[in-house]
Image (cartoon, helix red, strand yellow):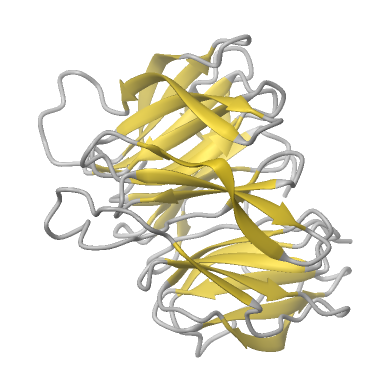
Amino acid sequence: DGRSGAWAHFQHIGNLVNPSLLISSRDQRVLYSAHGDERYATAFSIDRETGELTPLGQADTGGTNGVHLALSRSGKFMVLANYGSGTVAVLPVRDNGALSDHSQLVDLPGKPGPHRVEQTSSHPHQVVFDPSGRFLLVPDKGLDRVFVFRFDDAAGRLSPTEQASVSARAGSGPRHLAFHPKAPVVWTLNELSSTVTTYAWDAERGALHPLQILKSLPADFTGDNTAAEIAVSPDGRFVYCSNRGHDSVAVFAANARTGLLTPVAWTPSQGRSPRFITLDPTGRFLYAANEQGDTIAQFRVDPAHGVLRPAGETVRTASPVTIAFAGFG
């Protein structure tokens, strides 16, 4: 419900293996899923009147533990991060929205970070196109790097930029990133160090230049924590980060010119381990998917100050890890 933000359950699709991330096509006619324990991605058609899903089939990703998806600007190609095997795959998209098997598979070179468990090899955790669609950014948790590729949307091919990648602090574990909607700024959330890095973005060369690093936690928190997801308000004034351990959503105000962040508040996520957070398409509501708490918590966003207020009933659902919106009707 776009006015109240409340959700009503109307369909269940079972027998899926670990659907770890969902995205919808730009025309909102197709939903795509990565699968954390498999070597394929799945496409579903979306009924424009009811929102119901119908499977369109699966396609080979060329790697293991798919964790993130992104559609090219033309919508003719899907790019996927294979976390387990340390590769990025390009999959052609058919005219009906279904996926074809991968047409390119790119390895990510580099020295693993110092964490003996989480950084044994390359672990790309996300794939994000820049606003122009000409570049693709890939935060690699295992190598403490953010890779930058050029993307040829006519041929569906990735190639490294001159910079190729930018190093993060050792042991930080870059996980997810987000672009400012208007300014040349990129924010990267580092999972292992629970920090946020602000980068200046060179939109001509496809290059990142670090400006600032801040903790995603309050100064008086002394427990264990891993950062998970980052979201940006539609106007770019506020940045939100989820903390697993502190079980909170951090709110930062962003400088309109530089993108530098200032902490505003930390709001309890109303459950354990908020692996995913997202704003609804209007920016009026934020939802926190508490994976270990088996809940999706709803918050109303204060448009003036960015702070979050609990709103409406909590959705009860087992191990939520991803949310995608698609308009219909």
